[in-house]
Length: 199
Image (cartoon, rainbow, N blue to C red):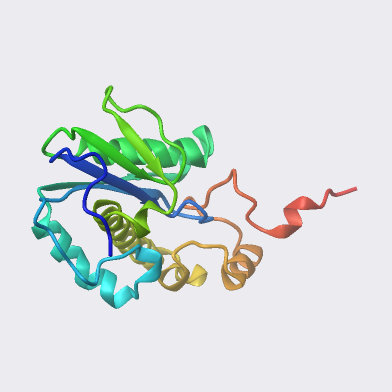
């Protein structure tokens, strides 16, 4: 059973990101403040849910939340400030998009930077422990998937509709064959051969 609240403050916000390990596309974060009475038996960490359940939960979370925000940080910025900083920036931006200022922030993982002086707690595997982080993980994943499906139409040869930009064998083979796009993260090791030096 997921817990409702860490801090006992009514406006506690959970935040999480999706797409950190991808070779292409943005890192996407969501922030969610749920009312005290919110319950859902399906909701869990988005990685443990089927795509069907994530799609089902998206409107349930959006209509049930007191407020939610979603934000993308794109490839160019990821390459400039690195993926960890980009993930934290995406979380900050998603909190910016909330209609109410949170009184406390709970964050999935073990890295975060202070946000507007609000107290926060990082929680490893927080998306399997707290409802608001689980809700944020579902929104981050579903919004990012929608974006990847959209850019798949532009570059179908990479099959982003299926792999969502993650480093699958098929995705790496497509990079070898077709090169990279404007959506690829240049700072990432896009193909294993990048390790080998041309001598």
